[in-house]
Length: 335
Ligand SMILES: [Fe+2]
Image (cartoon, rainbow, N blue to C red; front, side, top):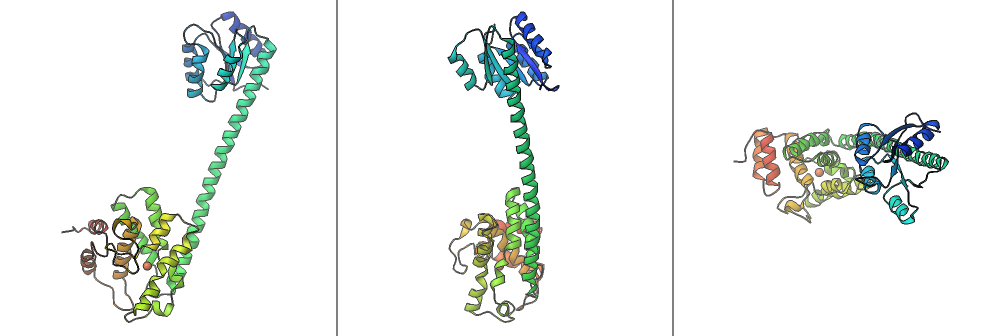
């Protein structure tokens, strides 16, 4: 069934042939336009959408075979039927290889022309429908992925809050560390995807504390070596917990958030810039929030003391570049 939206372009340098095809195809219900050379074809394609071009191979100037790739590259949604006076199978194969949808021989059998046009247009409609459906599916998937991420993030935030509720000193810690880390990430010029990873890594960085003994966690005095080692297992436990649901950058960030820049941290496998940048940012953000909060073993520190302490640890515990970014954000300089 011809569609009212579909316009056909009849391309031939002989006016009599164009007229003949136009009469037949118009009678069948198609809207037709004409062109007598390559230049006219490109002008017409550039100004109105053409569903199908019936393209004569032999024309003065640029031939149909030369024009075909140009049409396919610039107007991939236009179907093309090639027409030639020579019944040459090699020419037909060459045209089909270059993207023509069909091939007709002159002198035309008008019924054959109609059937070829009908077939090419039907194929084109199907192609367009499939593409539209694919786009629809992609949009749906994107929408649902966004929804799932939102639900997952909500669940994770609830879990993080539940873990922090066990510890009277760290309520809201992960949320605050996230805010600080994102400020530092922005200062350091992180890309949007890296910022997104940093947000997740920060929010989840202490999730491994679910496996830490609450008594040790809340111990007011100094920790023994064993107790400290026990608490520090939360980095590996946390990385293991999140690994199935987040990307490798995020789990690495969690695994290394207590690493010292100079390699002096507990059981540390990597050091310096080998520590993921997200983990180096997290280390400063985490320390800042820890110092600004009351802890079982000491009260909250003043901003001046915190800044001094972070500055003092630049190059040892912390990456100096991240420290510089931190100092910039609090309006201080490295000197
Ligand atoms: Fe931690």
